[in-house]
Image 1 (tube, helix red, strand yellow):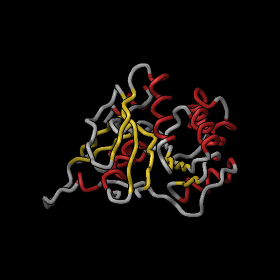
Image 2: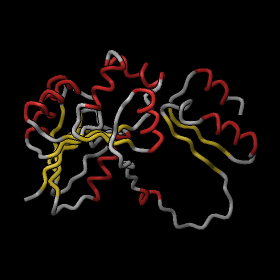
Image 3: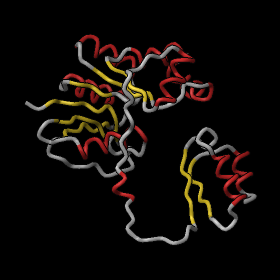
Image 4: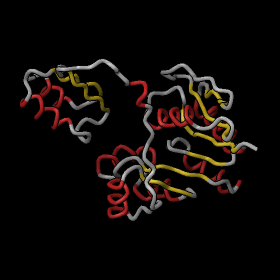
Length: 227
């Protein structure tokens, strides 16, 4: 009998958690796992087709279809993976009622910046920690994430680190390059992801072209215009 695994993500969205599950879906053994997941009406990618995948499409309005989709996924699956924070209170309630095992990954530092970003959804740091701790298993994606969040907030995670998968096969380039001309930096949170290092590199290596893609403040945008 196959293990029914629910990925609480949208497989047609370009988002870190969604792309992680898309990679897992590609490499999990089809003879062992039967995957359930979601897609959404405003997706960015075409939906993949696999014989071991069943997907619920979340239509407008999401407040209705999201509840239907997550309910279907949780009820019909053996193990639940919820990396996203959508409907977290409802999902925790349903998991508790049904006594389903679940897991979550901690993928960021819970610092002042991330807390401000999350306040609209969680209404406070206590709810942020609660959203993680109510799962059967909670994994940090790096030793630094694990130690920082434990020291700052007492968030306990499993001793094993669950590194995020990356399908680097799509980036394979067999051409042999003898010179470096272009570097790309992609981020939706440039300040915390090290855009300052890119500025320093641009000053040290004026012959290189740095392509910056993502979201930033007006201050950063003005600074980039000087290069």
